[in-house]
Amino acid sequence: MKKSKTISKFLFYLTRSLAWVYVMTVVYGSFSWFTQTNLELEQNQTIINYPFSEKSFLILEDNMTYFVFAFLIPVLCYALFFWLLSNVFKVFYQQKLFTQENIIHLRRFYLTNIFLPTTLIIFSSFFIEVEKEIISIVMLHLFLGVFAFFMSEIFSQGLNLQNEQDLYI
Image (tube, rainbow, N blue to C red; front, side, top):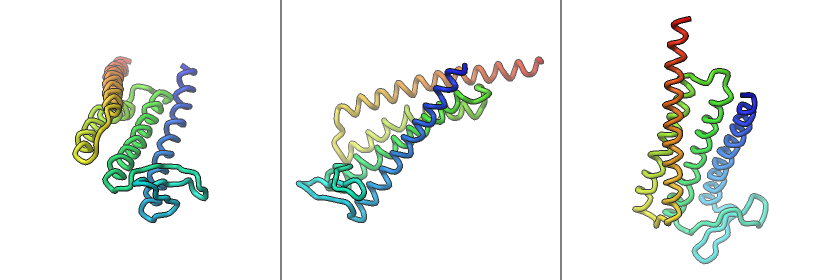
């Protein structure tokens, strides 16, 4: 069990860091877009450079619809994904695994993965063209959500058994 706690703690910090990287990307990209700072315009593209450099960081189409539906929403959703995933990893290094709080973390993760990608793709398809590869990514999130659902059900059963055991001791 010590190995799994060590690995889950490492993965918690890794995924929580990735969530912050995605958040900072949205903040910096939005700041640059709206203030026209560190931008280059080339052939219907907006290139956002790294701060204090001329090296390209983000290459976006030069229209607001693309910016919102192909940059802001997806990147924010992946920030949310990594944040929720870090909470799932946090579950596995806790002293007590089968708690209501841990089940809530798993439930948030599976509900988000099952419903959010499909909803966003359907909504976004009214405004931008959705590429075929995106459908594969949505399917992966659905499978991940179903797997997390099964884990949540196992944790719920474990919590029930744990509570029954506590009553008999």
